[in-house]
Amino acid sequence: MSVFRKNYQHFLGYALSGGGARGFAHLGALKVFESYNLKPNILVGTSAGALAGVFYADGFSPDEIAELFQHRDFKDFVEFTVPKTGFFKSSGVERFLKNNLRSTTFEQLQIPFQVVATDWQSGVVTVFSQGRTLIDSVVASCSVPLVFKPKEIGGVSYVDGGLLKNFPVSIIRDECKFVIGVNVSLVMDLPEKENMKNTAERVFKLMSNSNTLLDRELCDILVETSSIERYFMFDLKSIDEIMELGYNTAADAMASANSLRIVRRCHRYYELEDKVKRKINSFKINA
Picture 1 (cartoon, one colour):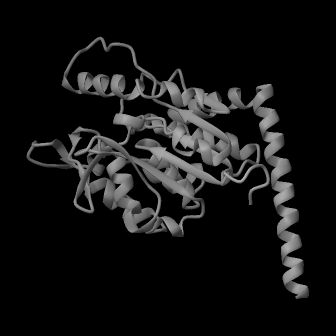
Picture 2 (cartoon, one colour):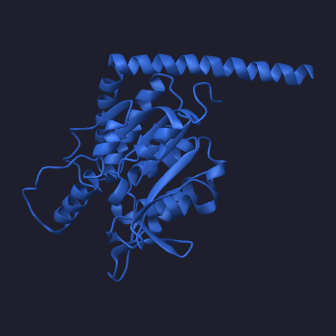
Picture 3 (tube, one colour):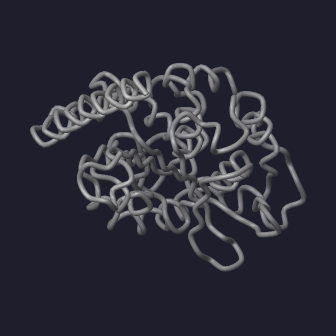
């Protein structure tokens, strides 16, 4: 329902950034949004944001999503391969999604959802939002170059969306009256111990952060977890700590006067939407 201007397809959208294991902060933020009784009309995610977003769009609560990842290790999600384009296959991620998601297509999800990946051949941002590419597109969005082999979809190779669009606010900006963005991918300090793992992560972080500047300015509410950089990209041992940081950061952001104004606007919209639905249903009954 559009009651503001015809090119607003949605009232409230959430944009979730990439960031590896730091993406568990998304779950803490989502818990805060729920405490304000906010209901997104659309979700868009890159990499870790796509992973958190697809489960949320599929009807899982933030705590249920966290539980799925508890007591797991990085090796549960990967398979070694001959290192040509990446050291690991993402078969474990794909298997995890197939075993736990209730939906197999975008259309089956409870909330409209968009996944951002990078076309490895043409070097452009690609957005997936329909059909049976749901699981493949999330795998592609999480396929960090050099770490994972590119994911092939329809004969085209795709890699992590964070390479070109790590914070995908602009993907839904023109479709939404309000956008809440959660950015969990800030540049970490130069590590004291330099090795291939730390160097590769820092290179990717510097590249992905350089394309977030515009998107940060496009948020109506920006949640940015500035105390999360110390966690390694593939750290699955600190889920609760990372989630709590996301919760605390989002709680601070939502307490601002601007955020509370937007929350009130959302609640007024929900009331109006409910009245319209009841009116339509009464017409159907009396017809």
